Amino acid sequence: MSKIHVLDEKTAGKIAAGEVIERPAGVLKELLENAVDAGATAVRVDIEGSGRDLIRINDNGCGMDEEDLKNSVLRHATSKINRFDDLETLQTFGFRGEALYSVAAVSRMTLTSCTGASEGRRLELHAGKIISQSPAPAIKGTTVEIRDLFYNTPARLKFLKSDSYERACLLKVVEESAMANLGVAYSVRVNGREVYNLPAQPGPIKTAAIARAEAILGEEVAQSLLYKSFDKMGLELFITPADKLVGVRDMQYVFVNRRPIDSKTIQQAIYKAYQNVRSKDRHPAFIVYMTLQPGEFDVNIHPQKRDVRFVNENQMFSFIMNAVGETVFSHTTPVVADVKKPVSLDLPAQAVTEKLWTPVSESTQPEQSAPLLFGESSELSHHHPWEKKPAFGLRETETPGEYHASLEKETSAKSQEADKAVQSESETSCAPSWFVGPYRYLGQLHRSYLLFENPDGLVVIDQHAAQERVLFEQYLAAFDKREVTVQKLLFPLHVDLPPSNVQALLAWTDFLKTAGFEITPFAARTVQVHTRPHMIRFEEDELKDFIVSLAQVVGDPVKSTEKLKRNMVATLACKKAVKAHDPISAAEAEALVENMKKCKDGMHCPHGRPCVAQVPLKDIEKWFGR
Image (tube, helix red, strand yellow):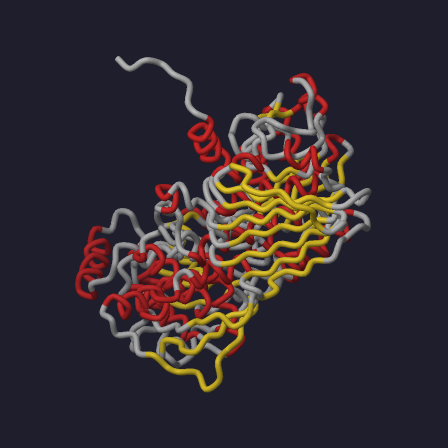
């Protein structure tokens, strides 16, 4: 058995760096927190490559004198605390005294600082060792320059992903810091190109947070946010209404004492508040600011101080859930709770779908998320099913009276002959199990749901979800057969995106090109689209909308190309499918059902939501006491 011994300082330093810094984004996070703790009101960030080549942060904070500058790179050297009890009253981000020490241990660092009272000083370190000291200009503030990150720990480099992905992570850190510290101005340049120039927002938090969110989340999402302030826990809540949910989870921010955190307790409480109105592929965008006493939560459960534990998790859950419910549902029309009396079809569409109609089969879990639009229109489009043109499923020689006579016979539970006829028809037409014909088209409900009658009662089809499934299977088949023909755009299309989304999208450029989309960078916040698949008939605005959605769903490049392909095709189908409140003719409705019959799964959209619901005739009869 080996003897126990104390590790040398160099080895211990590299291990400590591994606990605090996993990738370049970890370096940036630590240094931004130091800048804000130093009282900076303006921060400039320069990044080259993936952050391995260069990360430079300049702030106008209080600065350090010569003695403090030397001590700042020592392990456990800090100005934040003097003893353990100070953690109970701590109001700063950092306190362990490990940030500069850990970063210096795995890079070539230059540290320049000045308090403004005398000339500045500069330190240069390689792998944590000071190799030079020199005077510096008397400019108040601190500049930390990190080059050749992980140059002396090559094993760490193997775990880094593509440059685009690492840059996306770096920009995400900046975005979090900027949302947390509204009174600080941020300037960010990547490879010499300006990405962010965010002025300080010193005004009331309601206007300041929205202004900052417009630059980071986009104007549409930011302007939709509902706001409410609560005295308890100093809660300032910004959150999307139930009809403005988004297709991704990356627009969710929680800050406790301006520290960005991950909290399953808070996230689950928010989702719980939406449980009766949220489809599984839609997510709330939110910004949560809380002010707590330091002793009420613990950030020491994770080396990067990302996860937190609250003293009373149950109380936190209940408070957040109720606060979200009060904020969101005081701005919306209440949903009809139940139906126990005879009803007409003149009801809110959501109440009808949730309370009266049950899916043909259980919905599967969604595999990815993509946008789905709902509006507020309330209209029932009436058609005339007894026109001379044969209705869908009605034989041309059959009269309405004869149809109803046969319909009554088919729905009799005791009629074996009718059961055999339905089975025979199904087998003859190779119809799927959910299709029990003949179908007669009745009209549209709220210009969103297609109504049919069949031998079992009333059939309701979600027009958007149904066409989404049809297009999804058609597009997927073309991609799988490698039959994607490409159409070159006459002029490249420019699409503006948040910088972190630009980098995430560029990480998949090679794969997207094989799918028919040639995308290149144009500016820090802009990409150019040069081609599109020939089978996708997008207008310019539609194509822009698709690229924006695609940038949000591509996610981590370690995902399989198979999953990305499915996500991309599902997003394409969603964008091209008929939307809720779009008018549909009887012929189009009938054609849609015929196409659904040919699908491998005609009962669910690509995200798992049901497309078809059946209202049994016996249930309808019960409403009227028959």
